[in-house]
Image 1 (cartoon, rainbow, N blue to C red):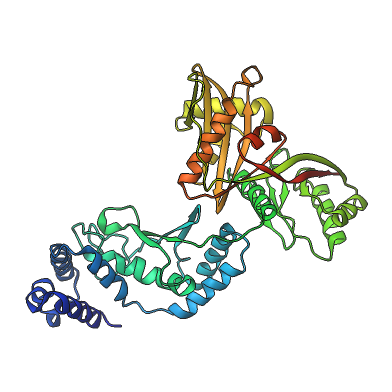
Image 2 (image 1 turned 90 degrees about the vertical axis):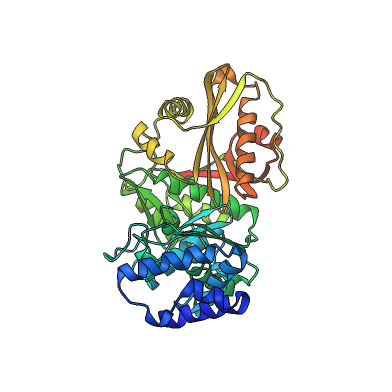
Length: 444
């Protein structure tokens, strides 16, 4: 659709509800519009400010969303998105598949995607056009990119909820909840909207495996590490002396003996450490043993539903829980973590992990002394990891209070299911977790 035809439709919508005088006041003579930055900047600022003056945001936002002129294959794209969703086991898997689809479809890679609970955040890449106003710098819209003054969010519902959101409406129905978050011409750092995705019915075992997978993805964050995805498994590789290198996300098929031999070769090549974590599968275990592995039981995998969770904060007044923010807090967190888990990372590498938007580090103090630490990772569901309390301060309820705070925070983010892999089953059972399966370790 041409720009003039689009503006004519908007003008018609305004006239239908507010009359010709309002149309003329807001749009002027659209037949004499000039395609140069100075004219378009002035016209756009008049257009948006006088729309705002109507004081009818609900109608105007809906009008802009419904009148997006950019076209696109909304029906085909919607069916493609629904197919990706149906073929994904988890929301995190769907988000990755959607990103790959965007990269194939769009020359700029498409929107940046971030999953928080079941809420998908979509942020548009910045435009690099040189013909831009001060406030429109980075905007893709041929009209808004010329503006030199901030505008309200009414106009931006066209590009976000209207253009980006329409395929999601095709995929999930018109009632799917979508929200405008911010835009460049409103003074934001980018143009972002959200889609509240339907929950996926996932077995507790699949959730536990997913929790371990997102933990492994976190382990690969520091510079120098790489995640390699093979057809039947994934692994983290990097410095051969690092203990963080691990095999994960093993997907079994009829060639289990071949997979076992491939894993044995991978370990012998020194690309990963001699450590493979698994849930019980007798056929695969037999294949691993023939390939030279020994298998021992290690921890338990547990899950809880926090939909109705209510934390009990009536605890010892000496206990204080905080989310790690400062470098000083991070140093205390690392020191406590190393007391049990060893030198997983340097301080610089932990600092890289700390910057991840889906990782939250918790620090517990007792009478002002840092004594316990843990972290949570979100990605559709969430997992609790690396819980440790200094021995002299155990059996005081410190870890329970810290985990309770974390569960309460996760619930506020829209998370419903939380998993943990742990040897401390009694502690987590008291917090509402139940055992899903035993976890085993295979070593050569």
